[in-house]
Length: 113
Image (tube, rainbow, N blue to C red):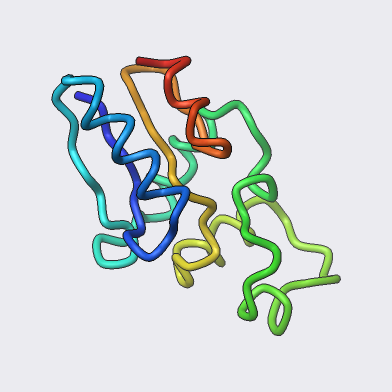
């Protein structure tokens, strides 16, 4: 089943959700700020996205700037930071089987539907 890691306060995430609703396909909404992904789940998502952990981080978040920016972090430390502070996770993320995209721009979601 298609999943969207969604934050309703984010306009790009809301656009991504609308794209999925308009597709008519079944999907599951994961409110990742409430249902926080574990480090292992984040590792799986990063693997599906085909990116480095740092590429999933929202680097303009105050938490990142205050606690992590400029530090030489390992991939596991970056993943643990996102698991501890889910606001750091880029959004929306849409997963469809063995494919995943970050919905920035939201239209990129169409590529995996």
